[in-house]
Image (cartoon, rainbow, N blue to C red; front, top):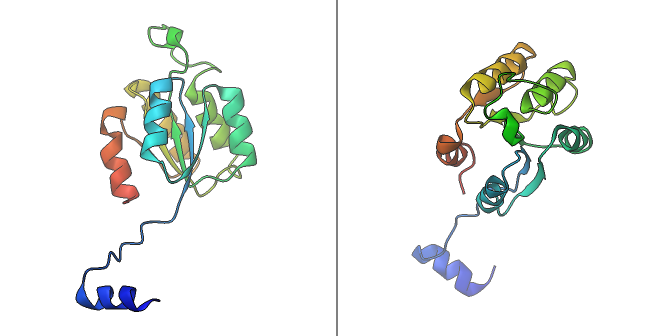
Length: 151
């Protein structure tokens, strides 16, 4: 440590905030605006993004994540569908993760969809499997992220 740094610490002028260690984040969402939002929010972290179930399974099988963010409705036809869940929605990943407890066993999972009914089905299935999961609607997500991972 240099003399100026040492002196600035003693006088209280030095910034001692070291920040948090980078985390590894996975996002499943079809909205490119949300992709940009997550990249900006986790700018100093590692982030992988998938917009479909097949790619999500690939990422989740081959990488380790601290946080996993899941959307329910992945294609526009799901927004007004009379059949709320199918193999192309985020619930397919929730069921897959519930059946494969060895995949991402310690990751915090946050379901961030605006589809509350779909989110609750996803959370219920993941909790039944013993997963650490919660539902946070997207408009409230920024504050929750700040609570978990302070800059």
